[in-house]
Length: 212
Length: 387
Image (cartoon, chains in turn orange, green):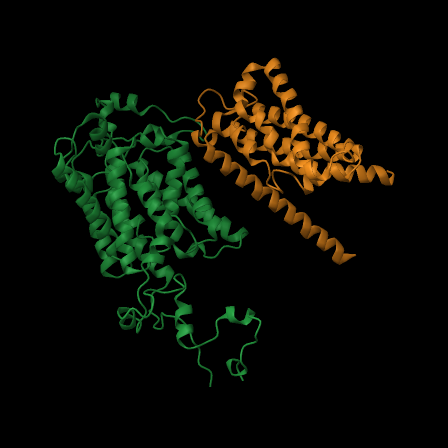
């Protein structure tokens, strides 16, 4: 692999693993806790955010030299809101059931701190391609986070995954998992798992460094 | 010569954590035995499985995590036994195991192990079970059923993750109506049927869905209090304030509110007051604080029972009391020895300025330099330093 490919891949993996928005930065928890009752909701929320994040980051990056520093936040919000409106109407047209299930949280993508944070911290300082790769990595990380939450909550809370019953008709649903506390329990559990994996990786790296 | 300045206690007693916990377990054994006598095989299985799950979870967390404590200190046994006693006897065993695991994991390991927990672990487990399996936890069966030592209550043996069998149908086979399975509190709340206090105290009359006998719990609690393994103030405050609140309401409108004896001896109030609220890590250490804490729990219990959708309120009342404990300790700090007279003159503020660490008080008295002063621009004087 050439050096640029490695760098691009690194940039992409930044959001998926090292700075995962849900599990490492713990950002965007409002949708992460509220819409992850089922895997389908979680995935579609992730895809909607992917679209908004990637498009707005590319546009912000393209316009980064035109936007005056004093009004940059307002400009970013206008750009983000434009893409959120697009996604809002799109979901409404494709599936009204999904639109009702996600409720106000589609519109609330506008105020998702991951998107504004990426626009401010990364897209406004980097060329469009780099901004796009970073945004795609971040959105993949966010989607994985939402899916991890949604899958566990759907499996325990309803005995299903993507609406397919896993345990037969006699399954005892854990009511708490589809309620708000369940979201916090599952999120805490995943944070624990991620921290444990990260720590183990760090220890291995240290061992390798010591042996070398 | 160096003099060590340190906070109270200066006199060490022979009691260790392990010893205290062992005595609590011993005092729980008669209660468990009577509970098994009441409900038979299912109660036995429930006690064993829930306690086993708590012990396994404790072992695992102590081994893998950095939390303090060890399985040999008996605290996980107490958590398991209390949790099992507070669940219905026919509670599916796999749900009991989940509740036990959650009790230790969320209630204890998360905070760093024994002594660091904010909430009573057994009640955390029960609250989780209440939120996750609201139907199963409200399904009681009557006590002293014939043949209880030969067969299990069918709901106990539910397969993991599966729904328990229908208890109402099983009761019908035994020529009992489904209502026999309701607890006295639920019967009063939803049907207006009042059980007599004399039946409730002993739990000896059959065909009532009651927990372990309040009289027996009081006797075992009295043993603990006499041996000073438990402070008598907390149960006294809880029962006193609950009785007083219930009596005032009863005097106000005798037709709408039940008599205070029914309030005291039904549900889990006695078990909660004697064994759960007195958990040393989660209740105040100051004597005045204990009275405040107990009064809060007693009043909350009666209020939840009367004015909420739930028939029983002891669990949430104690959890709320646990949450208020640091605050209660802060406002009920005893006046240090020697500070009382000057506070009467109004020269000094009553109470301590560092409420949660009495050690600071005695160090200030000795004229030692507080760490804060070292950060001031002018350096501390030379004689303050140790030669």
